[in-house]
Image 1 (cartoon, rainbow, N blue to C red):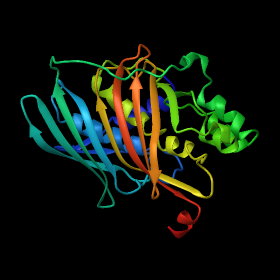
Image 2 (cartoon, rainbow, N blue to C red):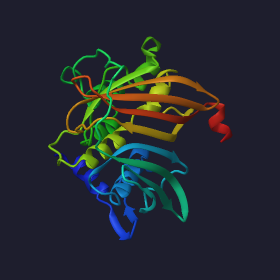
Image 3 (spheres, rainbow, N blue to C red):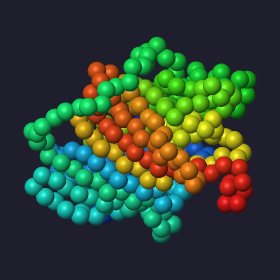
Length: 294
């Protein structure tokens, strides 16, 4: 297990400061705002700490309200909405500086037998082992920039292998522009057999590339002086048990964008083709004059 994954697992081990109140911290990095996937994952951990272990997360619906401040802890207040015989509902509010920065509703369900079908099929893509790592792809993008090369040399908690072009590649080559974005990912370590942990890690990774999928459809890229983006809301449905330390294909697409917003949706498949997670997110995308006005 590399140091970045160890740090992430430490960030997910929230401190309980009172009944249904938890505190989380952020990485010690010089970043302007807290990564949205981190807040979603920590909120999910907080909710899960208040639910019996025989109930699994089956859905979450979240709103990113304000940017998170990485310099101070985040307090997660959990409200016990309902404890039924089959379903349990929790609401989590993340607070900093006395204001809500994030809210999430989470539903848990006991394991039940029922009708089953899967109409969608996994896209036919190269196996992850045949694809270069994110760092290897980025080296070709940044060239000899020493600052970027130092950044890319650091370990990452998630091993991501992109099937499609990176946004920076599509920005340079318009033939690579696409409204589809397929990414293999896994956490490269033997993780504990805790179902909640694997769901939480999938939630963390789910926020990495959805905004990228909207940018990719327009040949836009992060780091450009005229582009600004952020997640607005996020919804996930967990269909089957899975492991985040096995490869998952995150098949994403952006069906629409307009009015400074973009919609992206994704499906996570196991290598055998089982659909295990569905995701939908709306994001803010502001370009050129819109950025100047804000």
